[in-house]
Image 1: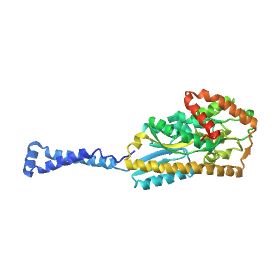
Image 2 (image 1 turned 45 degrees about the horizontal axis):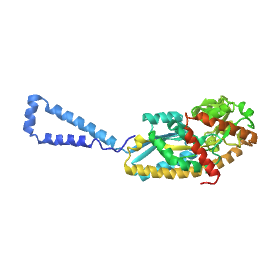
Image 3 (image 1 turned 180 degrees about the vertical axis):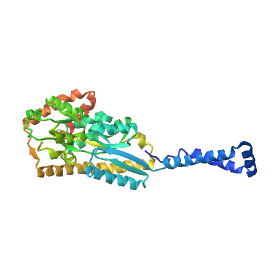
Image 4 (image 1 turned 120 degrees about the vertical axis):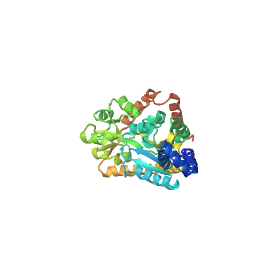
Length: 374
């Protein structure tokens, strides 16, 4: 990221003082020295070259800050429209001292690639799902445990109670947590109606290669998913490598996966979350005023996303029905089996994904909410 630092100013001032000293030498002395040593002209050339380089470097160093941010959200999607509105707000409020460049639609690779590039300095930030967040700080994935959080209200309550701690956990890993951004309730989409565990076993189901939670759930249910990254899902649906996938109505529409499916379960297996993060390394390069702009505008973005994603998911589900996708009512027996297997896997993800104590805190918060202890 280019920054507005002025670390070169002392060096430039030193060179300029040397130039003043040089002009103080009389012309006669300069000519005489040049005759005797031949060094006068070469010294001036060297000085001019050094000064030019310093001025060029200083101009680059004083350029506006540019945050390069990657996301899987396709250009033109709801998320990208929200991000572009946020981008304009940040740039306007910082008087263009902060510039933002998005890399949408997975052009920078899957979320694992985005996280790796942030660590290496190739990207300054990313808008990622909980998969990408989990690659930075895996304990955030407890919010997406299958069949645990049942509603937006439960998610808001639990996340609100843990928000400050989660942000601190990310900062300890070298990232600034700018804004939460939900994805929505996750359903299973397929070419055949899914009404039982046996039906699910007949599918060639996608399993996000970096998602230990859903992969573990499918294994508990006796289904071995096909591991792929998000950019590979649509091509794999087209070729028949997979014939079933999972996602929120909004994400499935945005990524065009629904065009290759016929059915969707009424049951959702989790509430998918996401967030916008930047590296602390790049955040710390901003001035105090620039940090304030970025944080305040990100807070506005978070409020917009958390509200509008929910409305957009309702609209997307209606659009899916209009497009011919049939909602299959999930039988109580199927829901119960999913809940039983999901409960069994929670301890199996300890301590590789989260600690036992962290999981128990979330479960207690849910109990409190359901008991009306808010």
